[in-house]
Every structure is written in structure tokens, then in C-alpha cells.
Length: 211
Ligand SMILES: Cc1cc2nc3c(=O)[nH]c(=O)nc-3n(C[C@H](O)[C@H](O)[C@H](O)COP(=O)(O)O)c2cc1C
Image (cartoon, rainbow, N blue to C red; front, side, top):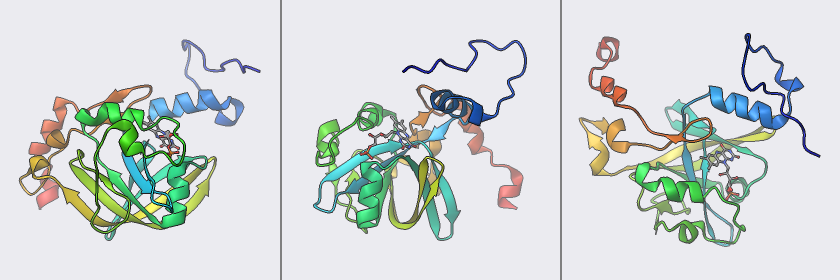
């Protein structure tokens, strides 16, 4: 049975809703159109018998910086989550615009024993501290060990401690990774985006940063 949309096509007055009163797809469309842009964790894992898995997760951010921890959320029990539960390890690959097609393809529904590096045409390169390979074409990687999982709503929050960081020299400038050179793929409401030229403001740090 198809549930009719409860999201109005246009608004004549302010929208004020209790999300519990809308159907799930409409709530999803609404909140993912409001929390934008989202960075994307391109997460690589391995199954217990060694099959490499790769998938994008835009419910993603940092949790702590000392020691550094990152998080993403799996909506439902997916291969990535199962592999992390089984092995305790994952890699967050940072995808730049040249990897957009492969990143998008890796969001497809593949059997758990399909090597998704092969499937989407990227190179599996050994990681330094963890077993899952990293994407050779990506220019930055965070190798993580599982710190905690928490069920939240229909999601499972996965928190990983970053135990190794790799950055390619091509994106390094003046003591840090330069956002413009990194040129990460971002998730917008229904599509992908990239950082705008406004990011040049980064060149003029707010005074308090260095006081
Ligand atoms: C750009 C993008 C972002 C996504 N973000 C998430 C996310 O944050 N959480 C989630 O559960 N699924 C997300 N998905 C869907 C998963 O990537 C998709 O279900 C994938 O098949 C999971 O693969 P796995 O079973 O190998 O883990 C996203 C898909 C795309 C294309």
C-alpha cells in the first residue's frame, strides 16, 4: 500500500510539525534537507573471511579529537555494521570529486561476499594499523578501531577511535590539509555538492584561533 505524502508541495505559512505524525519517507526527506551539507564517510571494512566492503555514510562526523574519535550511523543492520561488529575495525576514506561516481556506486545493494572495491573500480591498498584496506585513489584516510556502538532510533551509532591518519602530499598546505585541495564530496538534500569558493575565507583565520 502506498502511503500518501504528508509534506505539502508548497508552504502558505510556517511548517510546524511533530515528526511522529508524518510518514517515514517524508520525515527523512525533511531532516536530510535541513542538515546540509553533510560530509561523507566512505567506509571500508572486511568480512571475517576477508571480503572487502565499501559504502558511503553521510550521517557522519567527529566526536572527539584527543584521542580522535569519529562516528557514523547505520540505518538498519548493513554489511558495514556487521563487519565492524565482527572485526572491530574500519577505515574512513575521504572521497574527492574525482571519486564521486565510484562512491555513489558503492551505495548499491551488493551481496555481502562481493568485493565492492572491485565492483566500483577502485584500488584496495593495505592499511597501516587495521585489516580493512583503504581506497588507493583517496587522498586521506582515517583508520579506526571500534570504540562503541549505540542503538538510536532506527540507527546504530558507530564510534571509532582513529588510530592512524594518512594524508597525501597533494592536499597538504601550510601545516594542514587544505579543504580546497581535498575537495571532498558532500551530501546535500537529494544530490551531491562540493565546497564553494567561499572556503577561501579559511586563508584568513579568525584572530582568536592563534591568540
Ligand atoms: C551519499 C550516500 C550517503 C549514505 N549515507 C548513509 C548513512 O549515513 N547511513 C546509512 O545507513 N546508509 C547510508 N547510505 C546508504 C548505504 O550506503 C547503502 O545502504 C549501502 O548499500 C550500504 O552498504 P553495506 O551494506 O555494504 O554497508 C548512503 C548512501 C549514499 C549514496
